[in-house]
Amino acid sequence: EHLAGHLSTCLKGLDEALFGGIPFGVLTELVGPAGIGKTQFCLKLSFLAALPPSYGGLAGRVIYIDVEYKFSSRRMIEIGMRSFPDVFQKKDMAKEMAGRILVLRPASLSEFTESLHKIKVSLLEQEIKLVIIDSMAALITGEYEQGAPKQHSLGWHISFIKSIAEFARIPIVVTNQVRSRNRNEVSHYSFQGLSCSEIQECSSGYDSHLVAALGVHWAHSVTIRLVLEAKSGQRFIKLAKSPMSPPLAFPFSITSSGISL
Ligand code: GTP
Image (cartoon, rainbow, N blue to C red):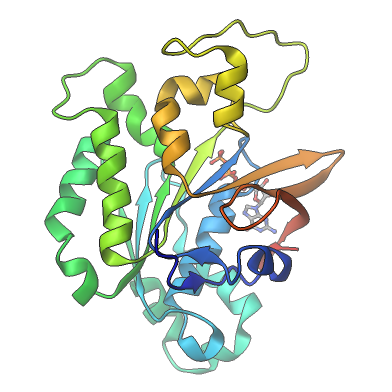
């Protein structure tokens, strides 16, 4: 895997642990319970990818797969204005930045990969510098849980998404929701012949619900996994999987300027 280039998260400790930020060419997953801040993180990353290089951005366009109607261009601009007020001294900058985000709302994973297939060759000339899928589990729910006819297996779609990241040398950031941990809940679970402990090992940060939805193939396809969680009222972002860093956790908060350490 070629980790040529990074999208800075502007979160100093995290960028350092990731040797510059979210790596190009691979999948990065944000996992956490509802309301922890995954979408807020994605809004910030979208702004940063669109930001001029003089401010540390990639001056690119972003494809934002907004499965659950959570994208807010107003909130993204607010995060940007609070973090980089100078940028907005230039006239019409808010409009320009918002215009760099292409928001898609496909009804299924097939529809999404189909549209990705169509624009694959133009990703480079369109200067797409980031693809966000918010959220992957929600995107597959329609076709895989309801048993609708499918042209390709989930594994095919996952491989295709990975190949897009490699081909276009861009980061693909995917969110996934886990249920918040309930210590009293005992789950007896096995998936494709793997025992509970094997599932936990290969899908650290997951719960059985997500493994059931996405499968173990997904867990292995992700190069970076960031787990967002809350403990005693403090939010943490944990680098749960990375080829170049030990597991590290950073406390963070969500303010008007977005996610900050
Ligand atoms: P799901 O999509 O439900 O899995 O949640 P998520 O992890 O994507 O959560 P999201 O990113 O939507 O974060 C929700 C949290 O962000 C809220 O609990 C708020 O604390 C915070 N938040 C959202 N919007 C704002 C805002 O405009 N200002 C501030 N200060 N905080 C906000």
